[in-house]
Structure formats: C-alpha cells, structure tokens
Image (tube, rainbow over all chains, first blue to last red; front, side, top):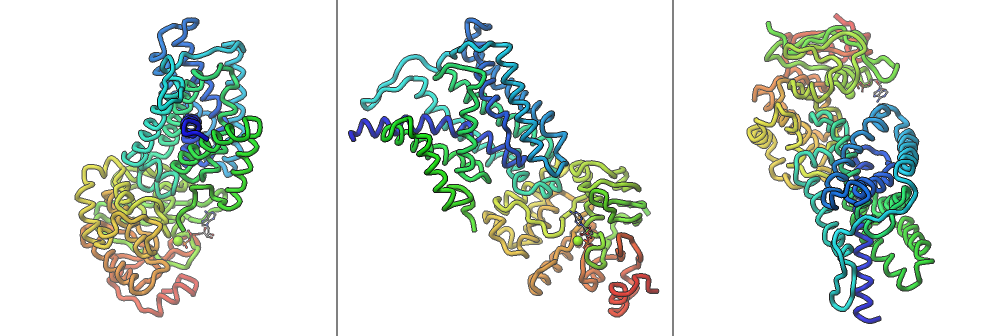
Length: 293
Length: 241
Ligand SMILES: Nc1ncnc2c1ncn2[C@@H]1O[C@H](COP(=O)(O)OP(=O)(O)O)[C@@H](O)[C@H]1O
Ligand SMILES: [Mg+2]
C-alpha cells in the first residue's frame, strides 16, 4: 500500500465519520436527556435537505445556498420543538414512554416522508455543494464539498461539546440526563430543556441532510439509512454519553473506509456488523461506554 | 406569628395508592422543625408532595404567603423552598463544583451564587478540596455534603433535609450533624427528617411524629422527653401520652 492510498483511506474515513458523528450526536442527545429513541430523526435529515433545496435552488425560491441553510436549520429547530410537544410531552408521565415514543416517532416519520413525497414529488433533486470544485492535497483529490464537511463537522461537534460542557444550560441538559429528580429539585426547567434537546438534535440532523444533499441525490427516504447507521453508532459508542458516539462515529467511518478498500463495498456492511457485535460482546456498554467503575 | 409554611389536610401518594393522610402542620418564621417516625410511613412522600414532585390530592400548602400546592418543582424552588431528598445520588458524572453551581440554577438564586458558594464551602470545607472530583467517586458522607451544599446554593428560605445521615458511619455522621447545626446557625430555617431523635432534639424547636401517613403527635423540643417515651412512640400505638 502506498502512502497515497493510506491517506486516501484516512480522508474518506474522516468524511464518513464526520457525517456519522453529526447524525449520532443528535440521537444521543435525545436519548440521554429524554431516554427515548427518536425514529423521526431520519426525517429531520431528509427535511433538512428539502427545506434548504426549496429556498436555495433555482426551481424553488432561488435565494442561494446560504439562505437555504439558515432557513433549514431554523425550520428544523422549530420542527424539533413541535415534535417534542406533540410526540413526546403528552406521554412523559407514562411508564411505557419508551414504547409509546417508538410508535409516535415512527408514525411521524411515515407521515413526514409521505408528505414530502406528495409535496415535492419523487423526482431526485440535488442540492448545491457547500463549495465548488475539487481539491488536491498530498497527491490525493477530493471534492471541495467533502473537504468542507471534514472541516465544518468537527467545528460543529466542538461547539456542541462546548455548549454542553461550558454553559449553564448545557450543564443542566447533562444534569437531566443523569438524575431527573435532582434536576427538578435544583429548579431546572426540565420540560423546556426537553424541547431544547429535540430542537438541537433536529437542527444537527438538518445539517446532515444539507451535507448529504450535496453528495447524493435527494429523495424522501434519504434519511432512513443514515438514521440506522446513527443508531448503530450510538449503541456501538455507548448510549449513555455524548462523546462516546462521536468517537465511535470516527472509528466506524475509518473502519468502513478500510473495509471498502480491502474487501469491497459489497461486504463492508456485513464486516462492520461483525466487528460491532464482537465489540459489544466484549464491552456490553459500548466501545466508549461505562468506563467508570 | 407569621407562618413560613402551612400544610393543611394534605393528602398524596403514588398512582392510586394513598400514603399521606390529611397531614396538617405549620412552621413559624425562624422556627426549625423535626419529623420522625417509623420507616415506610410516609415522611419522604410528604416531602415530595410539598416540593412538587408528587401531586397534592387534596388539602393545601402555603409557603411564604403563596399557595404552592400542585405548583411545579421549579416554581417551588423559585419561591425558596428547597428539598434535599433522601439518598440523593446527584449527578454522578459531574464535578463537585459543577454540581454545586447547578444548585443555583433558579433565577432567585443567581444573584447570591457567589456568597452561597462561599457559605457552602465554609460549612463543608471538604467540598472545596474536592471541587474538581466527580460526584460518583465520593464517599456516601461526602455525597450527602454535596447534596446539602446544592440545597444551600438554591438560596433557601426553607431547607428540607430528608434523612441526611442515613447509612453513614458514626464518625462521618457526627461530622454531618455538626454541619447541619452550622447550617441552622447561619440562619437557614430547617425541616429535618431523622431517625436519630436525640440529634433532632438538639437541633429543632418542635417535633412531629409521622405514623401511617398521619401526623399523630407534636411536641416542643424544649419539654425534655425521655428515651423510653420515644421508643414507645416508635413501637407502641403512637398515641402515648
Ligand atoms: N415510588 C414509589 N411508588 C410506590 N410506592 C412507594 C414509592 N416510594 C415509596 N412508596 C411507598 O410509600 C410508603 C411510604 O414511603 P416513604 O414516604 O418513603 O416512607 P418514609 O420516608 O417514612 O420511610 C411505603 O409503603 C413505600 O413502600
Ligand atoms: Mg424516607
């Protein structure tokens, strides 16, 4: 293997890992704060791309990509709040919340997917890339769009981390995840932070949609595969934290790039699952989960 | 005298199971109150209802001039009534310092955050030493200190402690009892649930015996009461003269 090949594998691994990390962090956020798995997360990805396209593309409003991204992220935040209020809040006091939330979020995902299909049609669309052209560095070439993802994704993840670690509100979000009753007794507005957690997760999913929309053709079901991948990443990384899934995302991204190069795309998914199952058998709390005694 | 807390014929419980049965008591401004009674008779349940964690089925609770029955825990905390619950595990993956600062999350507590932190550190010097340590790695006694510290950070007009020395070794228990005495000396009115009635007698002005979800007896701590009498209240019919 030449140095260029290694570098190429590394870069494509980091591109994949960045996307997975952005997908997974929103899921993990909702999981840790509310204790539910949000099956509408994939539709947030899809809608992120479609909202941006509608505002940005010449066949829509034609206001350009920057406006599209701004609108999409804001709209997803609002949609996240709405989803929490409609799909989760009415059932918070129920013992079977986890199961009810599976049903309500799946129902919402189906509804939104069909609504997207009806209003936007099944014809594939493509979003403008974040940056045009190609970049070549150290003898390998990648699209400027992918290069932008590699730079922007860690910045976004770092901002999320800073928000969670360094701000009072972020601290309160983590507190809710660790002990809801103690959080209530400290005067933390738990219900409001649930909405915030959903809004943040939805916005991050929207960004993933925008990034994907510049790589692949968009379709109403484009969020499904990424969501499944994100779920796997979250479980693999250790569902009890935010940083576990982020690190796991990059591990899986790199692993996937190695597999694609060495055994081909056809066997890659199966190989990934084998590795993950093996890891979970040895570390049931996930690769980066349950590190403390 | 002006009342700080008035609980009137309060009923509450879990789901459909009633635990607290028509409890009434009140607390004058500046007074400290002790609650005791056998395990499993509704002391913690009563405190959860007062702090908004459980619904009030009937009756009413007034605190500092406002009705707080069925208000949200957040509203009650903002009003200045702070509960340190029994066996609080707090936030295991946070540092002591971060946990204490979260105690000042309420708007009503923000302005006093620095002075309350100072006060918490002066009462529990150990917490200052362990400021950067994660809560999960603390001993039971230290965790209880953080829990009370979090309560103090809420700038309480009334601090309620539910069995603060439960399960602690004798030496650390004495240390904690002294610290609770210091909290009271700082002028924070307390309601304390304890099994150790002798500790309560030295701390509070008045004691209430909770039995089968009811307040069955109330007496002033000033009237000295004998060990036998207390044992009788625990194991007798709870209605001894
Ligand atoms: N979360 C709960 N759900 C149902 N019942 C409970 C719960 N917590 C406590 N109980 C019951 O309520 C009763 C009173 O408990 P508690 O208020 O904790 O008593 P105490 O604090 O006086 O020891 C007990 O019978 C206990 O089993
Ligand atoms: Mg109790």
